Length: 332
Ligand SMILES: Cc1ncc(COP(=O)(O)O)c(C=O)c1O
Image (tube, rainbow, N blue to C red; front, side, top):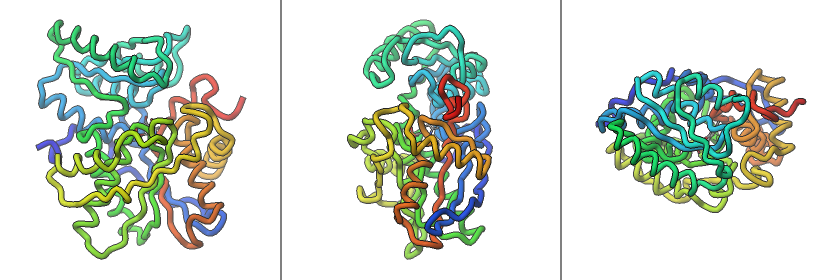
């Protein structure tokens, strides 16, 4: 049963750090999922523990996944394949740059095959078509491919964040914190679905105890438009794991006002938050994902979303390598 036996790829539990008190008196905590260890860390390690267990259970000899040129998910899949002895093929947007940087450089170091499609980052359909034909090709070569959709956001992948929610609640109990909210960046939705499912399960197992709001900060237009269906994915994850808990669509909270003009386009709020985090906590956030999520948390705290004394947990989902790509940081 997959729930009971993930591939051990991540260093868990990740630390829960106490941060400063924010404007308005909100107490900040940071759940360091940037420190999951695998391939310099990030949220995808938790998903890959389950996805790779599933791949191995299906007799896979190779992994295929898709992503934007600077995809953290692709880089971590490359690292997982290296650890498990699986050949990895990455279908990427854009063209091969003259000089590899950030996540692409690491993916290459981890030994993955990089397939550049020339497609724009928002044209997922083109990447999927390429992925399908690559899958046929690898299957014909006897490489038994296991295909992971964008961001690893299947019910299997979401199981990593079902477990993460319990891990976080146990740390909060040990530290005597009752968080009002858990805030993080959402894109392909698997992290969000897992946390929502984990919360529903916690609620079922601990009736009458308060559970934090689970608030995803959208950084891609598809999420803002309601894709994927996070509640459906969360329910699917609970069913797959055979866990108790009922997901109410109202459990899914997504803030869409912090993306700026588009995916991967820097915003002033995120850039200010990145510098504040670096200079206050030594936390490294990126401009595509975690910086926008953290900028939203700071903005919502300033706007009075929570009351003085409330504890709010930011799940730092990673993104470090992108800082070392062109224009990856808000400094020249
Ligand atoms: C650093 C980082 N944070 C957050 C996310 C969003 O996670 P999800 O795709 O599960 O919504 C991603 C996804 O690629 C990411 O790389």
